[in-house]
Amino acid sequence: MPTAIHPDRLSPEERLDEIAEILAAGFLRLTEKRRLRTALNSQQNSLDSVSTQSLHGEHEQTANHGVTP
Image 1 (tube, rainbow, N blue to C red):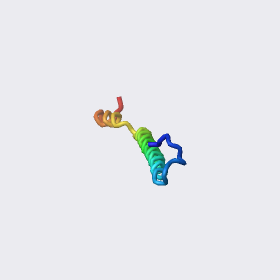
Image 2 (tube, rainbow, N blue to C red):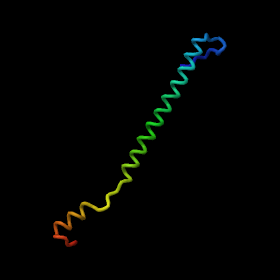
Image 3 (cartoon, helix red, strand yellow):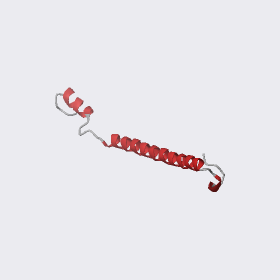
Image 4 (tube, helix red, strand yellow):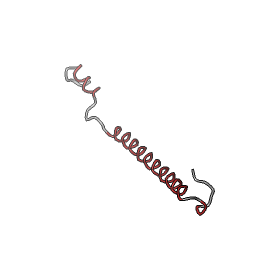
């Protein structure tokens, strides 16, 4: 977590720690954003697939020996 100390007062190790925290937070945000986008795309794609013929209509035709009501 970033501190309120001016960067000039940080040791080189503390500066590296601050940079590592910032980069890690950015990386986590990016991976979460990609994960959410992938999940959203898969939900949209699952709704996009439509069957070419209704199974209900096929069942009625078979039950009525091919004659539609």
